[in-house]
Image (cartoon, rainbow, N blue to C red; front, side, top):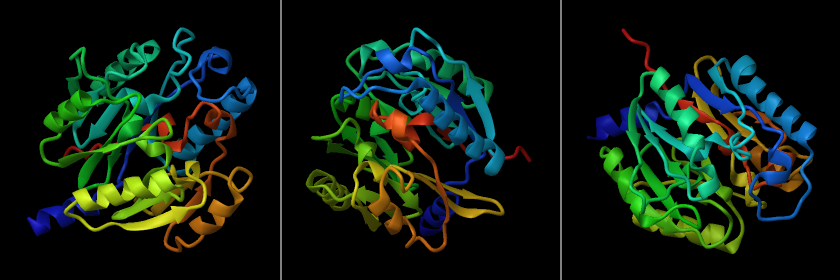
Length: 286
């Protein structure tokens, strides 16, 4: 088993494909948000373009770009519509009713990539991918305004090879509004009391040991980690313009290729860096 686990960990972050989606004009006025901030549509679009460019051009992932849908103002935040692990894709049932149809284009794209599709159809279940933290060894699912126990149970049923633990999300939109993976066995976590408390609960529930890197800003703890051929450890993180103190902390990650990516406009809609892509590992068919 130890060998199998080591093998699983060795493959953590070895993504080959990313699914992203265009930014609809309706995002600025109609996308859901917890603050009343004004969103600059052109700014959001140029940020998103730069993000997609990093994934495709700079990092060499195969990027599938789904067209924006004006009737789905939040559709750029693709992470919530699916949870992909290995060859299996769980098509979620997002917690906000206005977002339910976002899963249709995602399902079609993941089918096209030959993943095994499992659909969450139970009308009592809700799950946003932003509440799902996959560590490479197990899943943590945040029970939040958007994700419930039934949704977590269906995820556990779908990914039977892994332990699945639930943790309460008492503040912020999603579990990953204040944490993400920074590498194999490394959890990035915000410094707020509720973020630190949540991490303690995760550590107590787990059979695995995790290192933690605490960021002064909760939202800065949402980063995108990958382990790519010829590049090694890669971390997309927010910019110094957004979070100057946190960026100095990322510099401790001496083995990582650090890529700052601006997320100012989408952050106004509670959208963090992981929200805008679904990352997939397609093994080369031998």
